[in-house]
Length: 540
Image 1 (cartoon, one colour):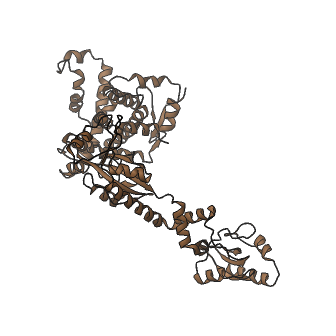
Image 2 (spheres, helix red, strand yellow):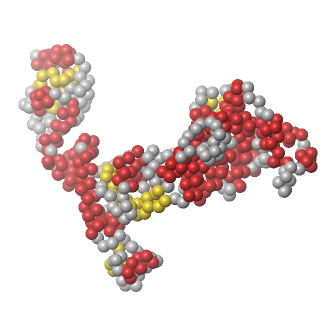
């Protein structure tokens, strides 16, 4: 189950049109500007009136409380205002706003401690420069009148907040440089001037696809029976009982007792057996030959057990767990492939030990699919005025115009679509996405619409197969997760310069985000955010 914040992040990522808005908010989130009081947000100030505990965590024993005047509350209020400024509904993003404010509060406390221990003191001139814009008039110039009309408590509050931001920026600038994602980094972490452009270009080219997936989670009964008959010896059922002990010496002594009629086999089962392989009465729970092969490692011992006559006891046999004495209780039985239970047993065997058999079966199916997709009519003209089913030829100019025009009376089915119908698989239209091994946050990830591609992000061969296709080219079948997949490339696009620049700009903030995540894992931090959030926000 997703947390509210995860749900909100999902909403944010669902549309590219809000990307610039969220990006702008991200800039504020990783800046100490969130701690400068600029007026509250009604939505978040209303929380102060709730008669609920407000401690969301601690840093080095110092409480992080959500109440008026705290850095946490100020940060939440400012972030909410920023969301509102970009037309975003703060009610939809409440938990992510609060969580960002909480995490930034911890990060700021950590940075303050680090800078303080270095002996750095904030220059007064720097503070003056930072608070100067708060005294600008409508023309954007400094107003002595506005400054003089501002009460001293407000000035003090502004100076304190400015000092905090300068301390914050001192730490981040020293570590990461003082840039905003551009190439003009003065100090801090260094990287190649071409790095951001390279990373951005990695996600610039995107391919869209049609996809057909043949699930390998099951196999048709007739194919299962076919395998079973070809390997019938594996499913021979043996009528055996067994006594199993942990000690070989004890097992040999028990065998002599049974042979000397000092104890019955049944009593040995009841009183001595570990029953690793049997039910309470000693009957073998896994009687098929393939199961016996797993129980008895040595082929010579296996042959001895399967060759027992009715009523005959085996020697002490080394088994996977312990030492066993087997008794034959009757003749073995050949597999009955008309019995559904037997068919289910064969299928279970294939699914666990012969997965490649299923994959090969559906790969052959997929190859037939590809052949049919290439030979079926490239398009079908469907109309409501009596011409339903008329075939269209894209090579014919008149037909090509009809296909291109589309409209309510035109439904175009290409060979891939028709093959999906014939083979009973669901066609999935996969939106354009780039090669993104590992689902990096720097670029679009594998679309969630295509569940069959859920494991694509860690499969380099599958990426190569898909992204080597030219437009309108169909792939050979390939195995991915629990599916045999065929895709057809339906388009190749390249993002414009503005989108690429968006990647490069946002990349500059991931270093700081990573630093924040590392700080949250510190033993000095106690994070009880979600407990407090649910208590405060979801309660009466």
